[in-house]
Length: 570
Image 1 (tube, rainbow, N blue to C red):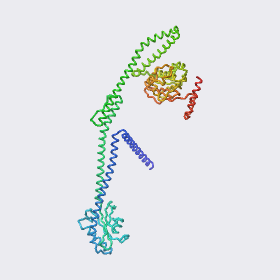
Image 2: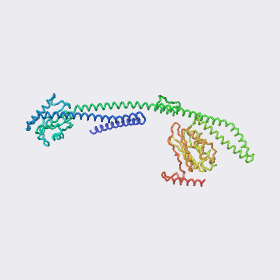
Image 3: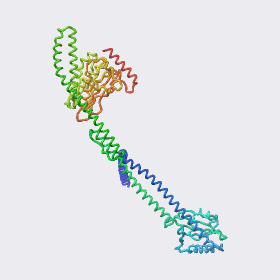
Image 4: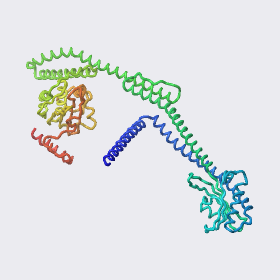
């Protein structure tokens, strides 16, 4: 018995879970539709408000109709009772006080009342409808002395008290029998033509009125339901007339944003929606003209940069040859002329680097550059870039520290571009390090590699981290530059990182230095994940053991102490 009960409980629980899951899915679908569809939201809101209005109006109408029916019934029943009382008074004159004789006289009077008009089986037809008469002779508070003819037990005690006290009263009362429940409008009145107290009660069934009220109620319910359906359909139709143009506008705007600049809205009529379509079309046309102008200007600028860079190559080669001849013979020149020859060669080197960067940036802008990715270890690339900048760092008085993992850090990269990125980052860090060391870190995880270059120099002010990758932008134009950069290195590095599917970011604070982070995917067809290195500055070696919740002021003091100690060593 218990295993069978347990199986039954499990089945019930399984069914309950399925029902709950289906309900949650349906609720989720409705919630999503509510958030995404203006038409559904307006229709359902109108339907809810209309339901409340229809319900209130239906209740008011039902109550009004019921009250009118009952009021009419009561007035007709009271009038009928008064007429019947007169007939009863005539029949009960000179009535005997003996109980047996009294009951017989009451039965005769009841028969006279019921036979005074065409009737059937004790039901009297009148303006108030059919009724059942009851005659009783009793004294208040003495129920044992009461003699009655008819269904006296149907009369409620509360009504008896009022009638026995000499008042004409009425009451609605429901009686339960084996045949069912019947509601009566009972009217009682005293009979005053006899020495003994007599009461007459007429019981009017309210079956017809209940049927009428039920019919009215059903009619109101069906009418209200049909009205709600009509309101929902009308609201849906009207809302669609407004929502559909908005949807077409949203679709056109989405296509415009995706590059379909010729997408326009159809102008139908002269209403507000038509004015919206006209305004949108004018805005789209204006934006299209401006975009094309910018494209033409950008193409002209790139063509100009490329053409100028190429055209300058020939005279630069000639000047370079002459400068090399002069530089080779500088020992035969006077001191001033020899120095001028050296300056000429240095500036030609810088000019040639600038032309190379201009050609590179023009190719990147034109989108003709391609990524020649190969799987390789990034540690030799970092060491090679550091070696290329080490001479400049020595001149600036800054050391380059490499923090490389012991295991291989392999990724699909373009050797030339990654080397150029690291070389530019190291050269930029040396140029702003104020003679302090520059640290390069390399790390990886399953999908991503990261390289950070950190210096402890002048740093960056608020908002400058987003500007450092702009072309020819300089944080402080008045500063003396040690590396003689072209101003395009970080911009080219940013584009090289983008070609790899990675990102180049910057962080800095005044007098706290700066940190640049290169994040690249290890495999070109696998998106990169979270970077294994933080962009916020890593701590100097002497203070890396600080606990995470230490006081920031204490960390600043320890950092300054570390830098002061390093300055003494340098």
